Image 1 (cartoon, rainbow, N blue to C red):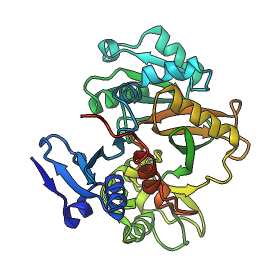
Image 2 (cartoon, helix red, strand yellow):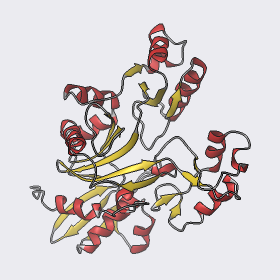
Image 3 (cartoon, rainbow, N blue to C red):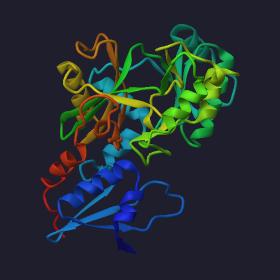
Length: 344
């Protein structure tokens, strides 16, 4: 049964869904939501109604993306194949089929590890960094990383990829054009010469913008994950004055990462690559992740596309830690309102 959304319910939505919902309210849409199953941990399907027209969205899943484009995005093996057909640069990748992933590694896997280490290991249908391990360079760690990826996804094959040097950037493509670019950085603290990493982390967590998971502009950093990354006693270290200490390997905002807006300085060629990737995957809305050694002069020779997302988070663009905020939610509504009204 669909029910009208109150302001209290809007405030409880995951942040991308909340931003889109708030943008709809600002345009005088009445919002209703459909009940969801208990196993669905995401935001509900929302119906925006105005002047007899209904527009549906769930997080960033909208009519701008088809079911086929969403399938392509979810299956990273298919997505990489499509990107290769467009001659877009992607990391060296080896597919480890799930049916043999828990067995002894084949010679092909060992040879790939030796030739292309360090590797990134991830499920073929991962999102938000789930199941990913970075920096694998020996067989024992590879076994651990593959087992971890299999635990995080119960039906995916496992991808072994060459780790790409450079910084990671999210290019947000809407209706064929890049509208925002953000540099996502792993969570970090800056030393003051007196406080421990644990104390600096607590100060960071006191920022009112930080919350749990996807609900706030910034996400709190899991101290247990930090301890695992830094090693025993790592949280009690005292960094030197102005020393930047990385707390996790992943730059996902849902794990505590931060973002810097670089839309104006990103090279035109990188924007073209992102737009081509979105078009090839049939996506009206796409988050294209590119690693490059030079954001201002990036091209196919110094950059690689590592992922394409059909429901990209937009808080990194609307709430960057540094740089200009981009009102992405409003831009999305501009495009939704251009769609033809479906005949019933």
